[in-house]
Image 1: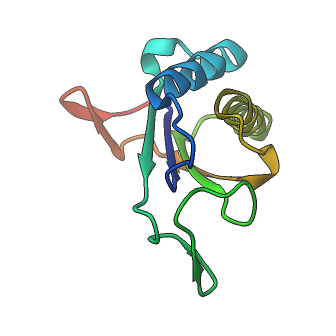
Image 2: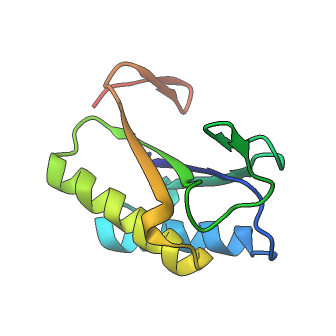
Amino acid sequence: MPFIHIKSLPFEEPVDVPGIIKNIAADFSDRTGIQLNHIHTTWEFYQPGYYAKGNKAAGHQPGKNYPLIVDLLTPDFNDSATIALMLETIADSIARRAKFPKNNIFINHRQAHSGMVFDDGEIVHW
């Protein structure tokens, strides 16, 4: 079930987003042991000028001061060590695959609770 949602401004140089997100999912699977077919990864781009830090908007994704924003959603049964591994894995993978500074990546982890998820036609309990 993990959902990895990445948002950024467009890059000045073209990047292979489909290849990058496939590799992020594979890296995540390899390091966490979660089957690849359960991992969902997306990357969306803000329009140029639609991401501001303070009162300054950027047109392209800079390497500093405007972090890539990642939202990670996982079931609530993971312990803190597993969550830390997931966060580090995503940051390492994005940095390597997108050739982007790891210290300019922001990842927020959210938990999905048993009985509060609708999937595969039903409310899911774990």
